[in-house]
Image 1 (cartoon, rainbow, N blue to C red):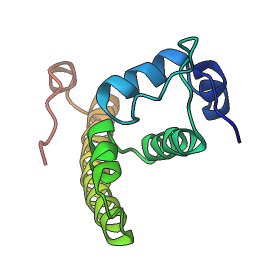
Image 2 (spheres, helix red, strand yellow):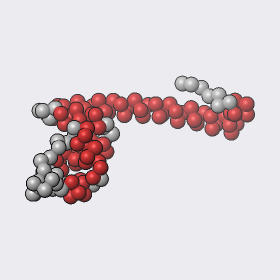
Image 3 (cartoon, helix red, strand yellow):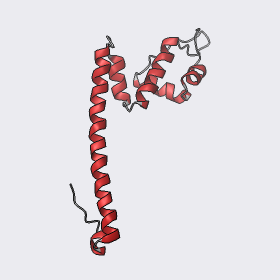
Image 4 (cartoon, one colour):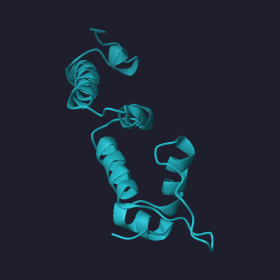
Amino acid sequence: MGALTIGRLAEAAGVHVETVRYYERRGLIEPPPRSPSGYRQYSADDLWRLQFIARGKQLGFTLSEIAEVLGDASRTTEAVRDAAEAKIAVVDERLAELARTRCRLQQLADLCSHGDAADCVALRVAAG
């Protein structure tokens, strides 16, 4: 694969040109060399990095977390595994929080259907 312009790189990665520029400013991808006429010349490695960032975002990683993994010079499987396990812990906590919220909402719905109207209107349900 030859050098890619910013437009072709963005299209191949499925992102907007402004996203590529933003990732450059954030340091997620290196500023590319330029042609004699001033066009950015991206490589296959830049495309891989953009695709890596997109996959990371789909998995719920923040750009800072992705930058940390990309910045790890060794980029070992252990580093990726550790990042994934940390994200799993965050997701598990969020799931538990959502389950608690769902339970309280169900209590509220039950209260409003069969309970005291004043408690329903005041949103009085068990906190835990």
